[in-house]
Image 1 (cartoon, rainbow, N blue to C red):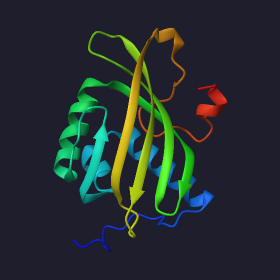
Image 2: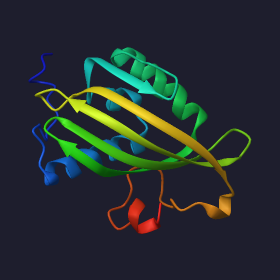
Image 3: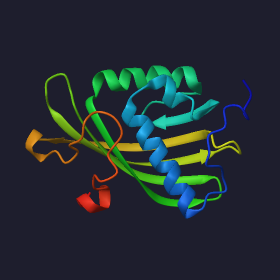
Length: 159
């Protein structure tokens, strides 16, 4: 399969509308928690920094995400566009999850993305902090899967 067959619109250079669309497509894919599907949005040799891990390429991305979602149960994510320019997008995000001891967390972070001409992400740099929360303090209450369109975004939630 070549890059054209794998293309993932919208393509750079991004406009405000297409950058917002790209962010929401990424959020929806991650909320589905399918490592194989998510990995297809990245170039074959995509480079990541996620906390202190540095996956390179789809195989390592799949392994990383498989491990992540086995550990981070009941995962729900919201991403929000922060800035964009040409083929780059910056987002802020928060996600809620619980560990195998039933401790809930809200993880906050920022990502910097760089795309190739086919809309595939070639670089992803993420900085993330975890905050333990009580279950009663959760704000992301939708069934597993993509966030419903009528659910508040990060700004609406004051996050």
